[in-house]
Image (cartoon, rainbow, N blue to C red; front, side, top):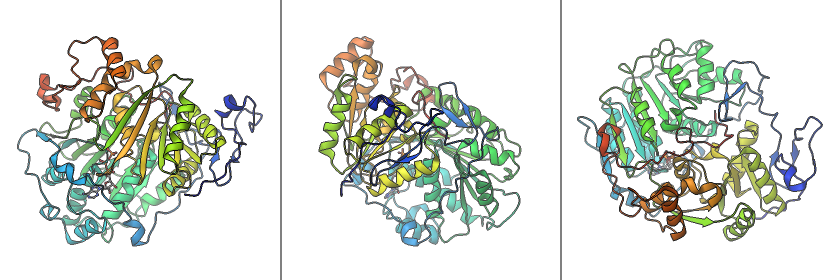
Length: 551
Ligand SMILES: Nc1ncnc2c1ncn2[C@@H]1O[C@H](COP(=O)(O)OP(=O)(O)OP(=O)(O)O)[C@@H](O)[C@H]1O
């Protein structure tokens, strides 16, 4: 890829520290939106995303539905219409067939038999055609087990490693049900009655799920619609009113639209929570309760509830069970919370002062290969993006203080390779499926091991290989050492001896057996046999950085 030439005139908020000056800061203390570098990205200040928000207790910002706030005018561009673009996909990797060797555990009564091929899923002709056009030749383990479970009408809590095809595992049987039950052809109405509600924690992720739903529903009468924060509410409403069988949304916007009486819930047959552990932790649990208690929403006995994630802390599993029928099935593909072994994980010991130099060194070796650099705070994301741009590394950034338009542009620049480095906060940690992401760098390690698993899972997807390098600063990251050793050894990765030492000395040795771990069971209903050590981390139930922004 042609390297773009970057001038060092960018002053993001974090840039204050770098330059020592006020750069392009306006008098009110925020930054001017200004073109950064030749062909680079735009950076703006925090006053730009002005849709109503409420500050959460850990500093996260969430869409606040109907509360006061300036109107957001952003209307996202329409998704591609051409068939080629709808079905664009990337190739499965050399390790795709190795998925067959992954251990699968289904717990709960009378699980249906797994399917081995898509033919056995008995999808209608159009769906089969769409599956083939998507380049899917055989189902992944979570699809082999998940599809028949959902088709049999069972509630499901599914845990499968990052990038292993969870989205299609729920979309295909749902679409098949809608097709075989002659879903009402979507048409304009002042109140819509969707049969399916899908919720995910971030805007970019829900949009991606929507695109998948649209792809598999191609050529059918089923109409998926997506609503998410940071876009014009009137636009969301108009899209919904045009007809809506599958409503995909981030929690705040979804509740807003429901609260305005635009969506009637009595026909909901499926409720899907993607990144379910995140949807049910302290950040979103109240919204999920509000959703299931919304007027008209069928009770859990009358609807099918499906939950998917790559991680499931034990406490969240227990909470999740309240949303499911008693006889739900728990599907674990591989180790619950385990990292994908197609990702080569490296942990480098650093001090906070050496991180930037190390990052530069690293990016010199990765060149134009796509790399996501995770940092802990929005402010620092700006700062590092600025720093890299000044060092002539074409970089863009995504975090919750960026306007939605800019977040989408940043992802587009990254996807196309125009900016091969994306500096991100945890807002990009979950679910995002981007081709060619060869590297993930944890410039700052997260506080929570599950967050680590999701972040590194942006590479090494669908049988492809990838590399994750994490900077470990003993001053701040020691509490993570023990869980890190477990995840590394669980994914057959080399564990540095210095890390093992830190892990041992940090937590004592009782019960700590990094090499000989056996994960006998993963379903909390099996009580004491749940052997996974989820050593409580400072933010165990919040899995996010200190100033993350989601919905
Ligand atoms: N059976 C299949 N054959 C080929 N490609 C597939 C198959 N199933 C899924 N994929 C592709 O694999 C990629 C990863 O799938 P998906 O995003 O659903 O993973 P995921 O398990 O939800 O990951 P995450 O935990 O990160 O959210 C996507 O590009 C998807 O289109």
